[in-house]
Image 1 (cartoon, one colour):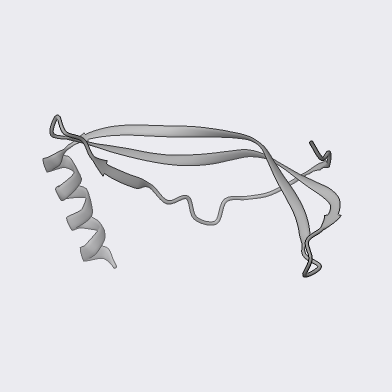
Image 2 (image 1 turned 180 degrees about the vertical axis):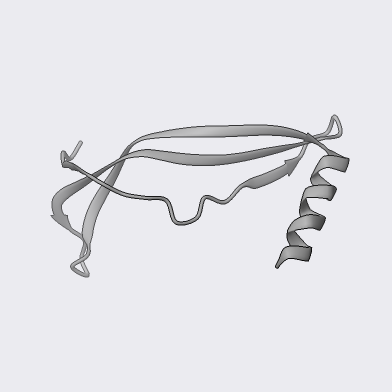
Length: 78
């Protein structure tokens, strides 16, 4: 596995992915990156190669009504 140097970062957008579960609930999942490493390698186009060494899944469970209410509020505020 390539090695690299830990570098600072800040999240710009952390989107949720929502799934309707057969038991009637809605499951929301997103991944939160906790560490980024920059390698000394570059890809074929010259871009630096990064490694996400550690990430953490975050999950929430909502009722269908909670999900509809949340998406309604988000649509109004856009």
